[in-house]
Image (cartoon, rainbow, N blue to C red; front, side, top):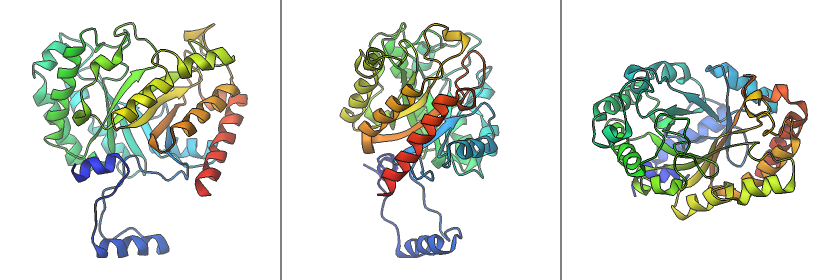
Length: 341
């Protein structure tokens, strides 16, 4: 196991005494270290037991600062989405790396395996047809200096029907993932990779484990989950989210069995019109239950990011849901207190 994989589990390869001295001086004076050390990904500045952050509609570091102020502790992780209109948007998201280069957050880039428009497919990707584009992605990441602070959330929610890369044929998905990983890593070996499912039985792939690329090709096992289908307004609703078929506990256990840390790159309220009748509204109980889940995962939780969206279709932003916002802030503060003991 090389040092790149050590970092995925929160361990740090051995460093020289000079670097240790520089880090100690930095801690005492607030100055930057004289020698750069590759940070653990995701890095933590929030004071919480796990790395914690958000998706914010404004793809700028200032939005993460605002989110930190709203909840009372800093943001560790910024979830963003690369473009999907053409290959340049997919394979060269240089604007994102430029935007976030000076920010402290780990950048989680949700990346499509190929453009959403055009005659592209998982089958062609599995044959290696897109490898050169992904080598370009790796070269761009390496040139940006951000590869060591970037998690690639490739082909997220592949078990659903709403994505162009729906894994109806899981063998094609696996082949595609492995080719992309290999091509990008040949240029930027510091990148991390998050294999993210959508909670529950998928309409495109009922057993998402069939699309597992293998331990060699994945750093984090991710799950996207929201307060709906069913809403966490009853004990039964939470039990289904937690213990139902391919629910939260299933994926936490799966990650542990595979020797990987769990991530929750998208989670949050869903009171918007898109899920009318199926979301929980301004639901403080959802916040309480999700934090109980985070605590149960313990040290195997790599990061989580609240989906703080103001779009009326979703409307999960904390600012739009005052009861849930108060409970979220309460849970964050409690998590910081536990971490400091």
